Length: 407
Image 1: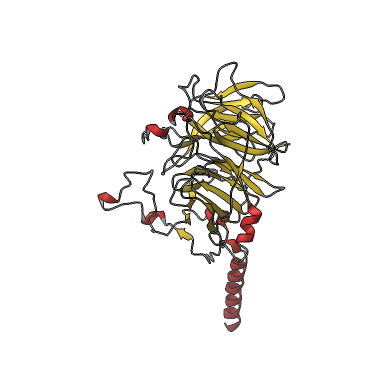
Image 2: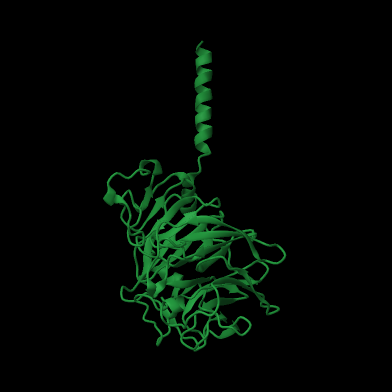
């Protein structure tokens, strides 16, 4: 009997040890910086008081735990695989008077710099029909030096980049593409929207790849990504008109492909209200396109219009976008810039920060800033740089991003 009891105890201890020895260490939440908030959605599926409902989702955000911003809001355990066991989220540059950090974030590995642009025509953007917006860069090496003793809020300098007159109201960026940064520019006044290549090193030479569709002007080129084939895809939506620095649009709101080897251009998707950010899945067989239909610039908001991420199949021969379906709907504002991480999760810059959905379209967590973000970029594995208009944040996490380099 004693031997049987000993055998049972040994078996139980062996199973206990075997189980716990296989528990991923990054699932152990250390949270040294007090920035993780785990939300059990079953506890918040029913709201009692009428005044608890969010009647202004652009300015009132879903933070049922009332955690202090910024923080990591966890809805599913999968998000712990993204942020790791002890993540941090800090401001690395700020200017409360200037929306210097709006869009077009591109990381340049050899110099460890992030390029980005200011808000074109929006609040605190210092740009309008008479003034261009700004392209600038920030050194991640300077950030690392400022945070040498640990993750804290810092304020490193931004360095303005002087570009030729052909670059007007930059809004989108990706790369590196054959060693250069691809920029989409909205244009301003009589200066047309265009797609350009920019050298990421001084003197920042620029060459224009495209500035029309068979003689017709684009509305305001918005965002851009490169397919594994080398074909460039970009969105066109009249935010320049909505922000009062471009004339009335002359083309529908569409997504285009451009083959830089042959010069061929074609429309690949047109059934969207306001196509905005876009990102390819890791295998390039699927593409995600943000539809910011509810955002109408200086004309305001319409909450009954789309605030979605649409998912398409990419035709293996023609690269046309097919079989459109809803991937996700954002609960705060609308998803703008999009990206994909090494796990295949889809990131969307929204009005409360950066939201993250798994490949099935389930919201698994948020980089919750409590303020608007329009775009972001991975700066190598474990560093997510988030643009938030008057601030730039750095999330130090476990995940890395899908490579955007080509050639």
